[in-house]
Length: 103
Ligand code: SF4
Image 1: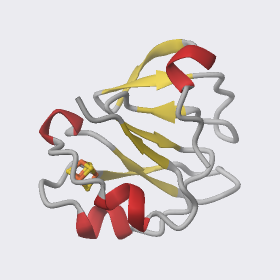
Image 2: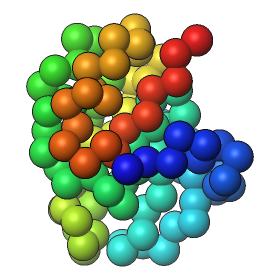
Image 3: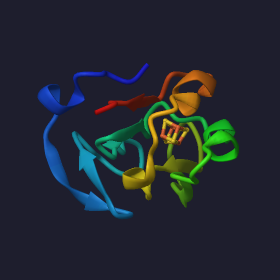
């Protein structure tokens, strides 16, 4: 699953799709962790879609990731500022790709 200490263990390498990218990245195979309050490890995400369906405030959007070995699209936490810390996305993700840091 996603490393909950990614902010310490990884480097901020910029922004894409309105959220911070935590490297390393080597596209298209390695895409890093995306977002900070709501963080999604794009290298683990399988595009299951439960987070998009269940988030009560529509934090996530699909972004296309052609050539990534796990899936050709990813759940991007575009509207992470809207998050109400319900933790549903963390609970439903089948591969533990999401970390939400309340507070
Ligand atoms: Fe949405 Fe709840 Fe996940 Fe926040 S914790 S992104 S509100 S499902």
